[in-house]
Image (cartoon, rainbow, N blue to C red; front, side, top):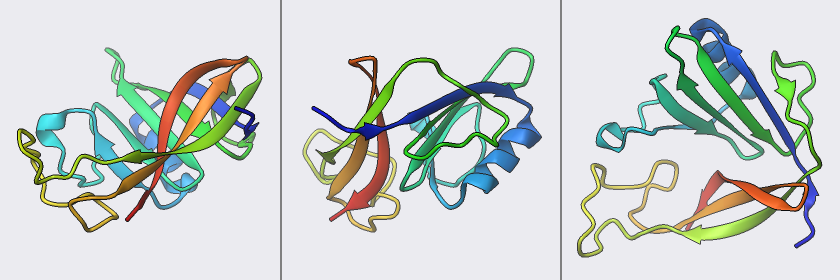
Length: 144
């Protein structure tokens, strides 16, 4: 599948610099990778991601307290304190149906999806392909 050009960046940041980067990128939805604490509070946790309509920022805390950071973007971001990941990146959009929160054998810790204000819907994602190999699926927005 032929897509549009994508941009992927990485780096290691101090906590304050990561907070500043999240603010520079703009409004987004922050998720925890600790599913037991999936409260959508927007807090900076040891692992997590924030996604907007044209980007996703992922991070994990390193043993020294700094954060390994990955930015997936549909637009170039040369002025950020991150390095471009080598390769030819393409991206294309796919819809992903969300599990209805009231489905049998599914017991989430929340009543509705953030930004959707519903217990059902679709998560529109971007697939990132590097040199012909699919590398990431990145959420972008919720749709009814």
